[in-house]
Image (tube, rainbow, N blue to C red):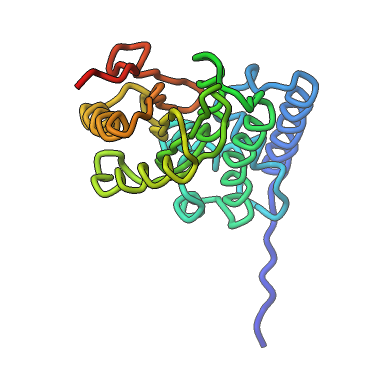
Length: 248
């Protein structure tokens, strides 16, 4: 007959747990009332999120510290995949899923919050449009947005996922998209997940290649915008490309 194992906790341990629960409850109330995590430290922020998931027996504060040690920052945690997060001591599948759902929810909120125009009439509208497509995306994506002569959005297509430096076969797909929509001009955009929005040399050379190709059929490349988190970079504004068709 197997003996039943009974786990006892000391008064000191019980007091520590009660203090921790009280503190996390206070953190949650602060966030609910203020609508921001700005008053909390990174550890407190992650611990507060973890405390919302039932079933985890590990101390949320200690687990939050381990997550930050493993991934370096909240940004690193948000960009990690569920299976990576779940490997951290103290994490459960439910806690890992909870954290992994935050990034898609932020992206959805961002898209809903943006005024996505049917017409792109200026650089700010172009940046907002690209942000609505690419903000908080986990993977790098490259879009072609097709515009009419009056700058109305008539269609868009995700041409590729992955590094723009590796899309040597995609000019054909870009041309195909432009012809299918009978576009007068195009707006190009892609994202740098977790990085800077400054273009790489390959980004610029690939854009110039596409511009030459499209100029050959009379289609303007109005801009190529790079998105990194909530920041944007315009190749036109920084002089990397010139939207005007060059005389041949």
